[in-house]
Image (tube, rainbow, N blue to C red; front, side, top):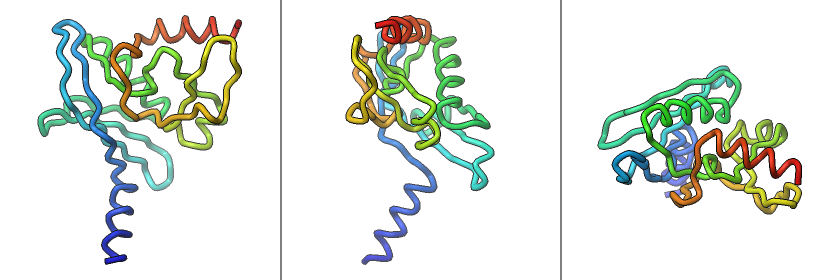
Length: 151
């Protein structure tokens, strides 16, 4: 029994199958379940994120630096199609520091509050599900973070 648990844990770690967040079609106002699959090369030379919906891969991106870079590329592609992935990293107040990127390969972010410094108590899984009302475009997030930095 222990071998099965270890094997399943290892498979989840290798495949990095995430929870099933929602994909929001901004134009139609429709939300659909999807799956996020991540994969990292053994030598850490490539990071891949795939969005799967209805059993099919609808979008795949790759980056050389880390998952944060891949998430940035993914966000641009989603926005071009008026889609929003409802995950923590795409929240208005999500911030990724250099240290967070190094320690998590870009899989963790801070949820910051205006006028308050970054706190380890506010670290969340970048791929974790988030409510639609908290998700904004890249431009809106950049504007908020600029205000936050100046607060």
